Image 1 (cartoon, rainbow, N blue to C red):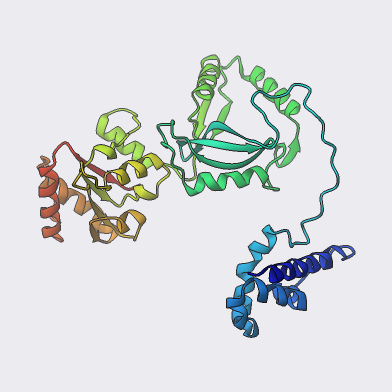
Image 2 (image 1 turned 120 degrees about the horizontal axis):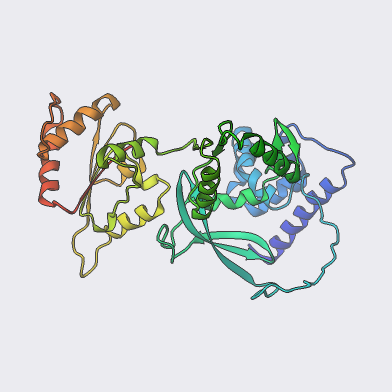
Length: 367
């Protein structure tokens, strides 16, 4: 874009913004089409996106283009919800934070818990305002990697609908009122060991918070603590308990696996970025490592893991149990009875490959 076009584009953008700011009271548009029906906006689009200029005269293409532009315009400040910020006073710190330099970013180590899995992050803060998150290379749960959930979590810091208060039966209340109520309930139920008290939280991964709850339960042995997640791993946890006889957190070492079999488990799209990184590292060839790992996937729905597989088998959900038993039998597991006979060649070839890499194989099942 030439300097002249750039100046004209800025001028048209300024005219559109001034048009919004000149409105008295609230101004609503029934659609983006209605707002865009101005010479300034049309000229702005022609200069900024000349390759799309021909679509402007077509109503259908024009409407689709405006929808795509909507988010960009909002982020650029071209919105009636955006106003010019009033002047603010800059007040110096009474006690300046350590290692704080105005205009320079600070980085903090933190962790984000999602679905009971913690991801180590580095948070970037600019003048006290969080601005970006990345994976913490020194955290074993991420090794510097991150995912879309962690990146999107930054937006919750600026969410206007974020909860600002404590609530009691849908009515806002204060922290002091909450503490007073909890103390009264605790004292009323202390004689019966807290039999009438129930705690409901999300999955707690913090050792500090866990220790605090354990202390409460030791003083109120009849109280109960429940953890709930809408996206949980209950089936995975129950399966591990059946296999090992106790509650355990199963950790897979994909960095050591030469062969991986997934039965409906989309582990490459799961919350555990460590697994994704370890598996991907095994697929990178070098002068020292001349053989990649191999991934077998049996699934009923297309997934990211299935798309990355070397050998994919598409089956119905009702066939998954029969296939799992057939694989177990082919691997030599005793006392397995099954009449599943479909995909026999795939099962036989896969089992032969897994047995040839005994001790270097991971088998995971979906939730």
